[in-house]
Length: 459
Ligand code: BUP
Image 1: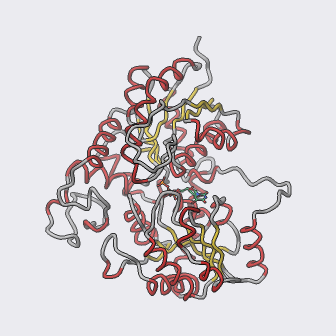
Image 2: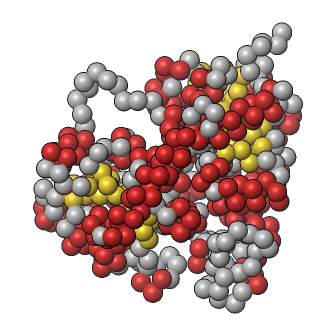
Image 3: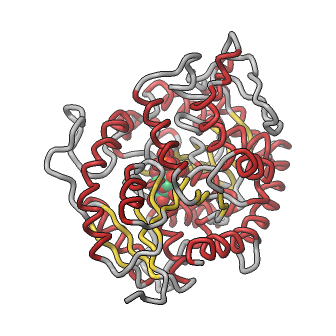
């Protein structure tokens, strides 16, 4: 018997930045009367279960086979992405989940559609075998997604002789790119190796899928969404920013975390705060963290720096003492959306992970862009040059992958929090915030786009 309610299986990649937006999408689908089953691995099970508990969404975990191949010695064996250095081997290890994944999907009530992360490319093969359409979740914007595809397929940067020379891409809207806008493998003039092979495999799988679910909205980057849809397939559907679907914090007075209490005190003192975080994956060097610390110390602005606990020891006790009263360092997992939406937070020094950028615009908070890896350099160009909601720090000599000096951090942070440039981008980000919410509300562009995507799948 075929049930009349559509049933979507959602399979996120096992890292925070890839899982969080798909949990929001699951809620949105559930609100649209689609029944949702999330599939994950045991390490993520309880946090996913807890965050969707009120939404009648099922969660199923499938264990990794005992030995995960390729995890380097010294890295804790886990079925979550252990660290960026293990990325390729981890992605390959996920292929071992394929038989269990297929068994689970077969055991469920009839599945209308599988939405899985682009990194889990083998799920395309499963979908083909099971005769179920697959949509690929792309956690990045249209601009970065298009660029990564072009770089892998056509290597346009082979036409230039230096890292600073813009290379030609036929009909590509406006932004002129140089090799310096990329990380390996595309920072090599002749990219090759496992990272490139991985990207190409991902694209081959994507080309067989029924569509791309993009966490962005049309009004934010119309030319780039049009460029993709006119030149590439399958169709890219903009259904974001998904963070708008984050459930509101509980009304009952649960005790506020100490960092929120600290922000409350800053609000009472009317001292605007810069929020500083480089995300859950980026691994800044000791040298870079020191430059940031000195820059923040000299800037004299109030700040909250959320740092991964394993890096905490790199920041000396002396620093925390010297900035006492003005800045705090938090080495815990925080609710970033809650912090960004706190009235007193007026700037975000960020690594430009795309979720962070969307969350910042939805909170109306301007950014200081300090990209570190993956497609973050492209995101930085997007938010600073195209959207105009932030200022950028550059490494000394503007070299890619160089160290951003303390003097640069100090200068740009002060400009964002107190200067004319800061006033300009703060005004702009408020406008962007409005269009983001408009896109997500009933009848808005992302709302309609999701509607037609559901229609396209369910017929
Ligand atoms: Br750290 C941290 N709390 O303490 P990005 C992050 N986040 O809620 P990244 C917290 O993780 P990938 C914390 O709000 C965002 O939704 C944050 O995603 C949340 O960067 C997410 O910004 C981080 O895309 O992720 O961590 O580099 O590389 O996996 O895209």
